Image (cartoon, rainbow, N blue to C red; front, side, top):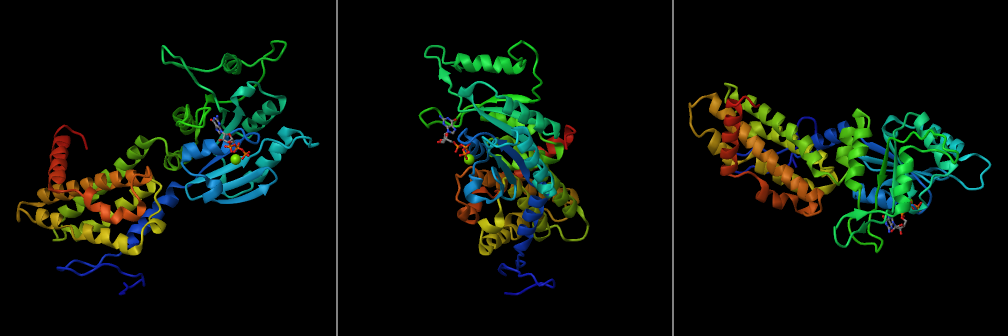
Length: 398
Ligand SMILES: Nc1nc2c(ncn2[C@@H]2O[C@H](COP(=O)(O)OP(=O)(O)OP(=O)(O)O)[C@@H](O)[C@H]2O)c(=O)[nH]1
Ligand SMILES: [Mg+2]
């Protein structure tokens, strides 16, 4: 296999004058984006069996305890992570210990604070079984300790049993739980004196119905509030790590696509004769690597070098671009720029849809390169993009 001057392997084929394709550009863009977005760290605190792991699996779509790298940090505290997600799994407190629960937790938090920056907690889910419908002094003490450390706390009531009214179809919860939620709004002690309870939100959740079926309840609200409470610097990482809200990912992908389309237009508008598919390929491949990162797809382990190269060759050899960009010789750089913009935007949209299919498990990662043909833009897509682009420009939109 040939290699370029910095020694990296060049993959791809020379066919009717096509340039060889360097698949590492794909991987570099992907891993660079993944490390830039960083990791979202969540602390999940609650007694054994309250449903912490089920909640994490439901929201993030993976069982980190099984697939991630885990280590018991200290008794009752585990840290599991992959690239985009870290879970501090904290098992309430040790019953019968001479150390008060809040103090035990303070020790745990000190331990976490001494860890590297990419392991620091962004948000806490303090989990309680809904049918316990009360807070113990230990719970209150621990919640105050978390807030004292500046951590945003969501009180997550788990295993909520939702009852569907047979006539109205409305869902409700047991009266005892309703009273508890009311109490949490303005908590008071048995003498009616207010209790300081620094929780930011109370969320009612279930991951299944009581028969172990269905998709659960309240999880969409939980991800929305978790995002709201995340520090700004952890928001993108959370949008990437979670699996319940696809529109967030599209919102992140769209500016990446329009940025790349703009770059492609600029490249095509230069007077030197580089405005063809080969010049656009690095821009498009970088864009695709970044979009894959937004869908939490790690191309390096998901795709073989051969499969990556296959997509790369398709892109850098896009017959469409070749014929299209040179369609009207002498028509001027505006036409070329418009085509380059539209082709790149359409490529980005197609790749985004493909990534969505992989992310939601509808497409096997092993079939990305053979499926790309179905998502790669055709002539009509490009023409449609050109029209949109022109209309957008005329109406003052970018
Ligand atoms: N009915 C019902 N059962 C649930 C729900 N969530 C979890 N469970 C069940 O509760 C049990 C414990 O759930 P886990 O998610 O393992 O709880 P955990 O807090 O991680 O437990 P430990 O790791 O042992 O501390 C499992 O059998 C789950 O299937 C729920 O929303 N409703
Ligand atoms: Mg667990």
